[in-house]
Image 1 (cartoon, rainbow, N blue to C red):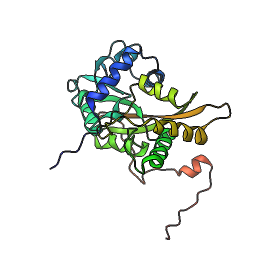
Image 2 (cartoon, rainbow, N blue to C red):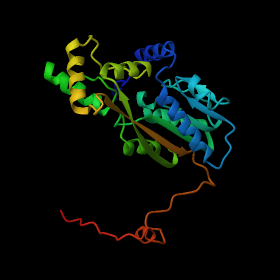
Image 3 (cartoon, helix red, strand yellow):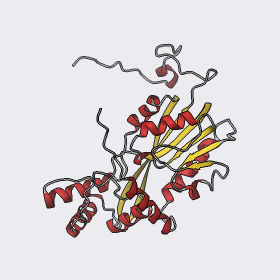
Image 4 (cartoon, one colour):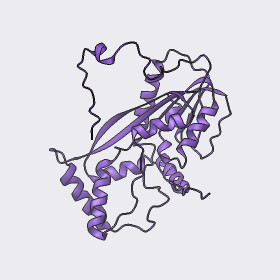
Length: 277
């Protein structure tokens, strides 16, 4: 069996993260927002977690919200003891994983029965505008394309990963945030400060010509510019929730076992689907 090529150049990603720390985590507002959101979601769960763990390359951000947590970096092999935790948080790094299912399986194994997993990561709508601008610019200048933005999963596919990893009661939802920037160079500067630069293993290693980013900036402004002469950038954060299986755990109803129709509950008119092609 052939090994799958790695998505991520881990040495480059580590270098980017070290650079972001030297910059003082100045642009980590999306990490901060995700940490606050997870903290709020956990407050709504009717349970006290006494043995949490967090998978993150930026412990200084997450330990402010979860000071008693065990922290481990998002290496391919997670340093988490089996059945040792009642909560595992995978914090805004799963989109860089070479084996996301393997990461989730390791998180599940680290949980005690009926322990909770919650993860946050960037989803497929993230930087949609930048992808378009770079792709159009590169095709116009070179006639080809090279990988420049990490591919990010769609919410339906990511929810399926929870099931593949063996989690019970899997749930996936997302939040789309729009951030305004003065221009493309300022967006690129923020991405460097977030440690979200191009660390793809398949990226072109040569330095791109200046014309690429100049042309991309023009396309970006023309296609996604705002009335106040700025540009918008989309960031989709997907939240994944699941539970380590347990004997006394709530089970989802079997399909067809409901005793009431959803249309009746909602007071809506039901429209049968025409299956004819």
